[in-house]
Amino acid sequence: MANTKVQEPFPISCVSHRYLLFDIDTITHVRREYNMCGVLAGTLPTHPQQNVFLGIPCEILPEEARLLVEKGVAYIVDDVVAHKQAVSGLNIAERVAYQKALEKQGVDASKAFQREANERKVKALEREAEKKQRKRMEKGSEQLDVSALSFDAHHDTNELFFEPSPRPSSPAYSTTSVVTKERFFVTPMTSHHLLSPNAPSPSLPLPEVPPSYPLFAHLATQGYFVTPGLRFGCQYTVYPGDPLRYHSHFLANGFSWEEEFDVNDLIGGGRLGTGVKKALMIGGKPTTEHNAKPSDSERAEDGVRAFCIEWAGM
Amino acid sequence: MDKVILPKPSALSSHLSTHLSQYPSPDHEQPYISLALQIEHSLRYEHRWTRLHLHTHSPLDGRRLARPMLAGTPPQRLYVHPDEQVEMVSREARKGGKKGGEVLRRGGDGRGEEEGDMEEIWGKRPEREWVLPTHLGEKWTLRRLAEIFGGVGVVPPDRDEGEDDEGADAETKRNMWRSKKRVLLAVVNDDSTIVYYIVHDGIMKPRQN
Image 1 (cartoon, helix red, strand yellow):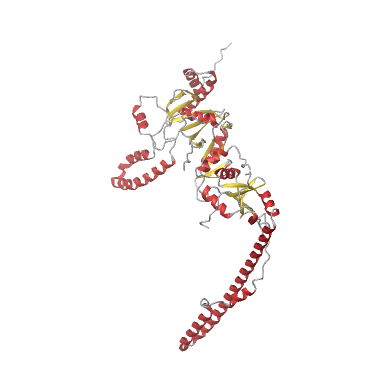
Image 2 (image 1 turned 135 degrees about the horizontal axis):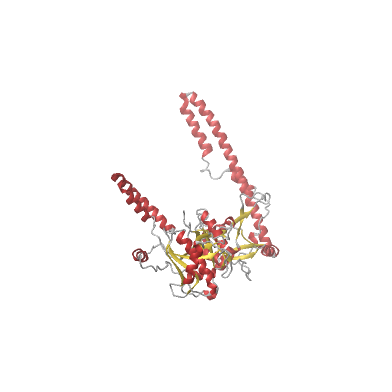
């Protein structure tokens, strides 16, 4: 788990304009390396109402998908198209290989099942033997003078039941090898193995993003964790580290450079933010004509300007 | 016919009428000037600010500011950087241990002195602030906000040479934590309620109070 290697670029599945990650390693990787948490969105097919503990897939924001693609560490896959192509576009050799693989999977599963059953059997026998031995021990303690004898017996049972390791091969194993041909019939649950591991050659267009994208990218590249901000009525809630470890610092709203906003919105956000020990942040990217002004002290490489608003307490 | 006796103008009205003429400016800027004067009145008499000045031109390059702005000194420090706050608390904890023993030894004598120290520790030495007067009904854009910051420096200048002692002192050993520009956004509503918010230029983590 700790050192899973994810090969970049990794695929981001696009299903009806939502961006999903289906691989747990990728989800871990993205969280660790690119500070993106996403939202686990998967339920059990049989219990779609059970939404307290959700699992894979992990849905990420279009902004996040775009930033990953722009960094060149991921690519977008139209999941429906890719799946159809992969399943219907197999040639005979590939089909046979796939069926072979399925068969092998079935045999492996069957073997594993048998092995487990045998282990269970051995354990049960051991327990039985232990019980018998304990009974004998009790009898031994009643007749103290024959204690030495009972210890001997104990030693014998020990050898008989608890030290199977020096034996060359257990009879249990030989029986499994006889029934190797037995196999389970596996119903594949994903088409994952069929999908090509490479990006689609005419790459899909970049995900569409709201005008707040420059601020998002600015924060994300500075190492902040940027999550959706519905909870605080803003666009993004910005954490200085992993949300499991830190409280968020900012309620962020991104605007385009000339977009108008009410002073009232600043006050509302600022007041709410201060009440929960956060600051309201607004920001955006200057249009090119304002870009080359040397007098601005606060200038990042990407040119994005951000302003933080807090209640003054007076 | 009797002469109509009008009530005396309010303090704010007379403040406006006496000071408005001091700032000759183009017509479109007149409302902003009176807005600034209203804020100035509030800061001076309700919040006990001192050394308040109205700036129509940038102290950096002498160009006209996007909006008339005020510079003034609050009675106490308006803003303490969160990192400075942490340092103050830890310094206080270190000092507090020592001081406590001393005070006990000397009885009640050390009390006044200690309070003075605390004042210093908590950085109550006020810092000059820029104030941006606005009205609640206004619309703002990021560009305009950036222009405001383009016209001001980190610490506003102090025109009062009289109180040179403290002013020069504050300027020379400027608070090391004050590295980013900030302005105090003053918002007036029609009912003359005024609220104050601090706007930082750049990413500034929130205070933990």
